[in-house]
Image 1 (cartoon, helix red, strand yellow):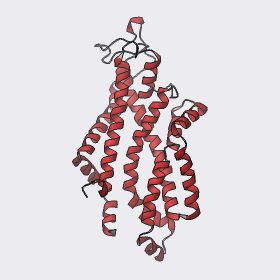
Image 2 (image 1 turned 120 degrees about the horizontal axis):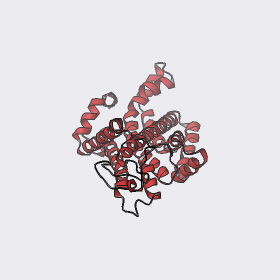
Image 3 (image 1 turned 90 degrees about the vertical axis):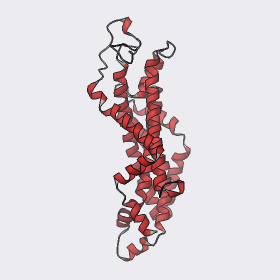
Image 4 (image 1 turned 45 degrees about the vertical axis):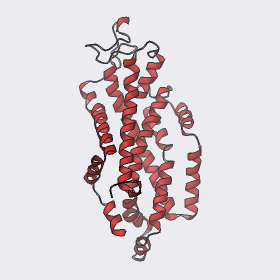
Length: 294
């Protein structure tokens, strides 16, 4: 069992990529993420969005798709397609950065709580339970309203309120690893607790952290879209959530301007679905009990 665990922990990036591609759910998820990444990274380079470039007259406001504007124009006569490309970049950036914060906080607390147990475990888990029972969205709305509509604030708020589930999952795995024979053996050889955590606990729990991280990205993107839709997004940054907000405020839905509100809505659905499919597929690979191939 120990040999198998070490092998799993040392699997490389391309091994898991191959496994994901072999799984139908993972393959479709990877394709969705590749398309979204191309839209977010490459397209804004060739189709930059200039928010100051507004329409010249009233006839250019909320016009449908044409040769000039392939995806129509918004309430200010600006190109919706260029906004869509830029919005993809901002939504993906916020989701990934917030997930980094969430993963670092949740994994760190989970590992230390599960390894040291006792009083430290009790204190950290009570803090985790508090954040688990507090409704996250209302708290995000309150903190966003207090600290301002800034992309950095949005990332920090989402990141620091998305870690409890990660902490719980990582703690459970760490508790299981803590009971295995390699821990007392390492201690008998003079290894410190921090060295054991770094060289034995972290490598074994890393696949679980990665699988959970992929799923957390989807939740963070949805949280950003929700905050932006209700008007708490960064007004200086165009994301898919802010596009939905401005389309609603401008009355695009009532006027049937589908080219304004449907693309960002489908974009959010597409990227969240991609991360969810990849996350569940990765979880199956790292946990054979869920039906993985190992």
